[in-house]
Image (cartoon, rainbow, N blue to C red):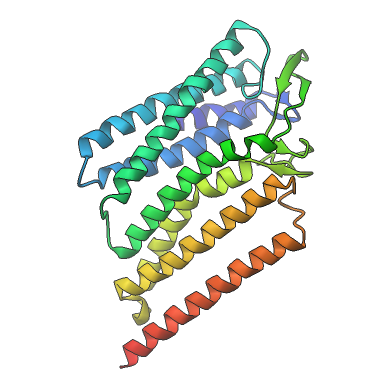
Length: 296
């Protein structure tokens, strides 16, 4: 996956071909980055298993094999200057691409679920880290599953689009809900309506947010006496997990309603404000109780 990132980065510089207004190499670059980050995280989780290590090894191997197949066809389609996802053209190459997606993506999801079960069955670190890992794995699984749940809301209208060679390609469906409008910068998320990639991103990378927060709390504990209690840090991580889960739920709900991430309505703002308020109150209560115990 790291090699795909390097190749795609070079492609961005030396290849001026575009698909829907963006470089043909931007998609494999983003996928390569996401797979690299998540692959490293998954490998780290498997290395921390105390039970089921052999089963975990085979599960990780399956995840790696099918992930490589998935990124390979995405990169190959980019190199050919054509679409990988939602492409319903009858060419032999696209038939191969869609077959890889159909038979390769479910094992990636299944392997992630199996790793989640292994992690949930055992303690893999101190209390704060354990909360981060367990909540993060569940969030990552939810981030993968959310695409299937939002599938019925997606616009299935057939359309044609020009590939990098200026040829019409038949497409069916898309990431957008309520129409695929112009995309946001870098992410290309739908700026005019909902987009399933947003809750997918928020859920999938929730584990990285929580792990980074765990590291931050551990570092701050050296200078803040009230954070040195493992139970206190675990409670703060539980609060953070609640906050990120709430954010995931809000953006998924927002996408299902066909609402753009950058144009939230009153209901969305209210939900976000409620989550932020509850998170702040819980954090302040945890801190106050910890300081009181420390004073006693």
